[in-house]
Image (cartoon, rainbow, N blue to C red; front, side, top):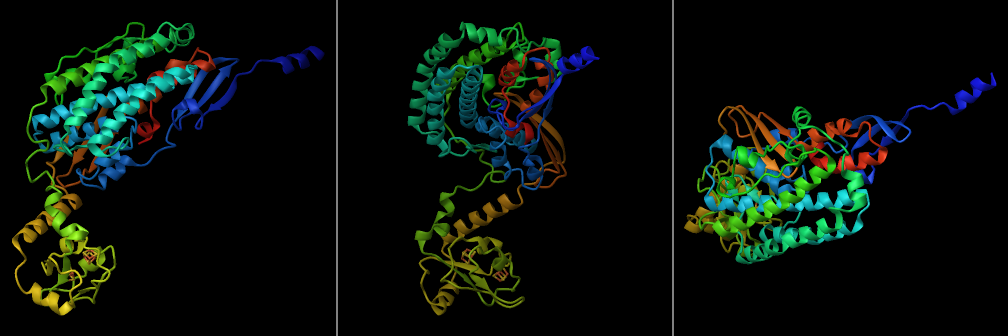
Length: 488
Ligand code: SF4
Ligand code: SF4
């Protein structure tokens, strides 16, 4: 009896514990339910979805050309690469030809994004495992890259710099000079990281032989990117299905042999060197020319062409011609300042005191009952009516035409050919794929994403079982996931 009681008290049982979704080493809101026998992992069940923002569904409610900024918010540490992936997919769907210069610029910023991603991965992976200094070193170089992003588009994280058909604007000379200097110095910085951790005893003990996965298994689990290449599979979309300027540069695809956490670390370190090399080649070969496809069907008119009617300092007035107005109320509903009033089927009127000169009403009016009067701000209604009787100056009419095209383009978008399409690009974490089902309208009927972080989070049970609890941290780091992309 006493012995039975003692056995009951001292019996060993598997424990079921939660790790996350707020654990600092889960790299976001990932929840893992661990079944542990002592310190040993018996089972891991990943739970995702805590950061789900419905990006795929939102994409279906927007035109192909509007949804681009959503992709910044997926893997927010390599937004540039997501943007490029989306643009390449939409360009293929519409058959848009991107100018050579834009292809090279996109390759440059894509590789900068890869370096920036791998730096953040190394910094956090090392920090999780216990190495603080590497974290500080990596942020030093990452800051440089983010400063360069800021130089070309004004944003550091959610950039939306690549555009369907090219890039938003050309790169300034000082950007190229600073980037060249970066590529000069970066190899010696990689050496610094390696000196710190490559042969570090603790690093080796925490990574060698941890989370081993064979090439066959890695393929069957759907792994891609350096997570797959660490197991010795040389699959890289930049080589196998080149896009942008990847077919015009020389680079190698680093692979591992053992398929463990250390090999995946080595792959990413070598990849950073290759990216550095690709950037230097692209700068050397950067051709002159436009950076946006010159097809008015797919590109927005330049902003400066519309500035003269939308810029507040131009002192224009918007005026509704009484005789031409059908009283449909579209302008009233569209006006953000509530400056328009009127009854149904009766002429509407603009209260000039509240008008912000935003031009929305002009674009909304289908009956061309509006007039834009340069220098009309502050004039009386009678004077405006008098000026409105004449034709609009040619440059104002041209600017107004561009403006209406911009509204139409953004609101409805060009119509895509009917059918289905899957296009993948090699982002820092692996294969990012966009799948569109088009019903021939300006919006995707269905939009789905193949996010590498989602696939890799599903592989965690395979990487963790049989290891210790502390190795779960190394396993999460080695697959380099971002939950914004995983949950979408
Ligand atoms: S220009 Fe803009 S603010 Fe002025 S009336 Fe038209 S919509 Fe309203
Ligand atoms: S949208 Fe045009 S027609 Fe309709 S109420 Fe406004 S000004 Fe008149």
